[in-house]
Image (cartoon, rainbow, N blue to C red; front, side, top):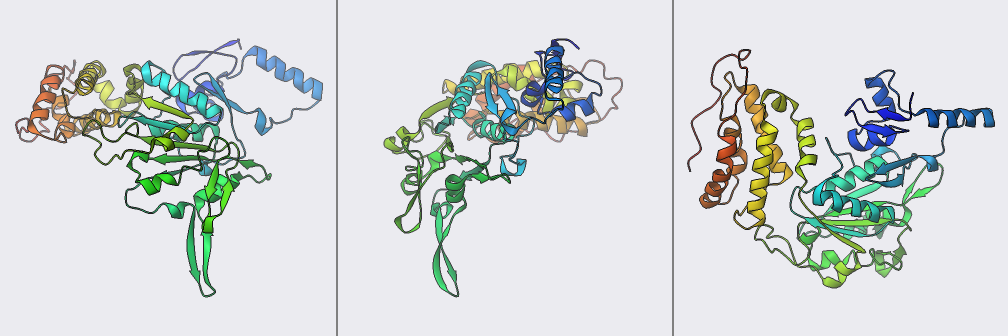
Length: 406
């Protein structure tokens, strides 16, 4: 062994211990990693010697207590709540990679610091910028108990907190799941209480009465929860309330989020931290794409380079109001996913594969003018691809009639 360890997944050089890197970069536990790479080294000489010395000193090895388990994400070290089962947390997003580069890398780093200090957080940004995914991943990796609730205009969210029950004995008040979680936390078998993360999505879709239910919860002095019959309860200290949205609370500014409502400025002010999330830097996005579409990346040389240029051009046009559209990570994956489907369906390698695949996004644009503007950006990069050696592919044609013209 040595003090510098080499990750067999990505060849990164890691000092002393691979566990944190595996969890953050590859969503792998140490046992899973060792199953995949038998005999791999995960602990440095220095830490191993320290561990052996501990055994000699105590005469026997003790398993680490839950408080000793930690995980470092983007330089911020969090305790891992070993007593909390994965079923009590938000699920880990498939193929998730913690953004490290560009503006979104900075956004995420600031947000992780705020999570460490248990701040209430309002995060807004364009669709597909990973707002909800970050909190799902954080909950899953740190084993923080969490629940997610979505704002739907026109629905009564009071039942999150309390409702009236009916039985043969008459009517009674029943406490809701959110009230119980924020007041009581997650109670582990040991009796220890772990505070919840409450993630409220589409918060800018909230109507005035809906939004008011979060006013007391986010109080920075002592969070409280509305209960039945005018009662209130204290929020368990350490509870984190996060709201995500597509707008900054002032309503729709771009004509693309028409269901967004203006939010009361005094309510927004109660969130201790407010962050705008930007689109993912290509360096991070490319790694996710490679994991999601390995066959396409392998069979179509240069696809990542082409999509990097297309993604940058489209997003610049959108931000400059030259294109009335969205091109999120979901949109990118929609095109690449259809390209991989077409690749698997074809019996002839078509040089316009990516151009044909792009229709799944183009057809969703609002009008012919925007579709033409988008095609003008796409055409130079996607109209032709070179497969290289095609001798191992049978001939044929997977396409139907052309749909390029409106």
